Image (tube, rainbow, N blue to C red; front, side):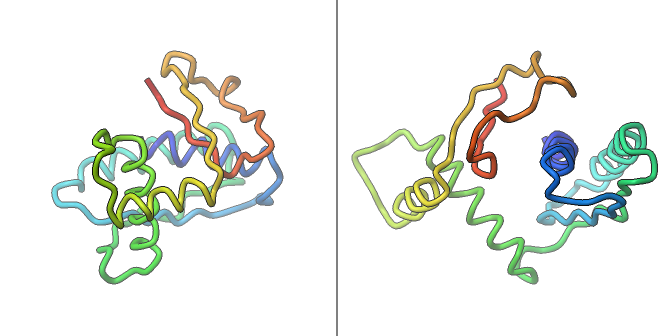
Length: 142
């Protein structure tokens, strides 16, 4: 999932001219126990992918984990992700609490457009967004 998030995100930002090249990327994610091997694999795959597509114009300068309690950015990302996940996964509508209110607020504020996308259709040529509000598109991989 992180691989798709990063490489599709870089592709999108380059294709929409939101970032100029050359560019270095430092990716930080919430620290989880026992993920050192997965992070090494992820870093290797991303290095290979970015080099194959962009040569040396996009470099992964680092992939690190940070405990959420020391990074306000990670805490905000956690709230954002939890709000989106709650909206997508919460089934019991008989109770509505502060978590649901935050989730509703995030969803409505960002005007999230949910698109179901079959994983077999994922390719470099077939992941372009045709939406006006491309900063708030949520792809659901099935």
